[in-house]
Image (cartoon, rainbow, N blue to C red; front, top):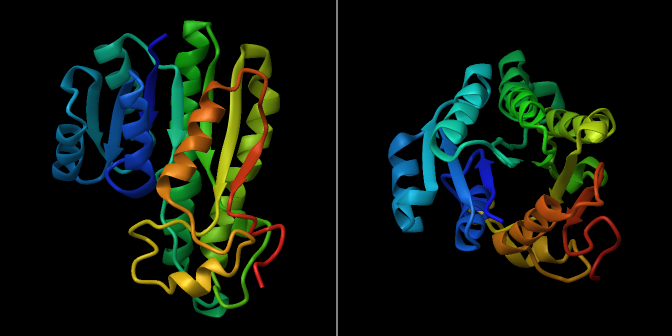
Length: 244
């Protein structure tokens, strides 16, 4: 059965690969990002214009979530899955974090996820057939690194984890499942030219992850009919142990 999937932050990295995988298996996808030209390039690369829609907008604005739902309904007749991938991450010592820094993370990571989910849930309840929401968090919520001071980013992502478990309970009666993928260190544009060897040693599998591996977890949770409230680490064993 073909599903319609909204993937936020899908103009690069993890989000782009998630969108690719849903399209390749035959689903409809609504792409989102801030840069309209990048979204157009991603949509063209997917090569299936009949099954791809785009909406450029800041996910921190509640109106963007509503616009994404409208795009899904107008183009494909409804929505079945939301993947809240859009977000930002960065390191800065705690005492140097400004109010603007904190607001940026809270808006981009937590507020964006919250209000986009709200818009999708309203539509899912109207459709009356349940649905699936998959959030993207981080394993750093459970196992921080002394050498990576990222309190502002992690406070916002911790809120995403809390939202996941809270909504799983609240929305279960409506058949709406809410789960999250918590990546470890993944090869994305955010990783940049980081030390792959040193980063890989932080995980039992002695390597960093690939975007295809986070995508596999998202696809599983999108379809897993008896799974809700689960935060799924995709981290090579980062929170379980060390390779050496």
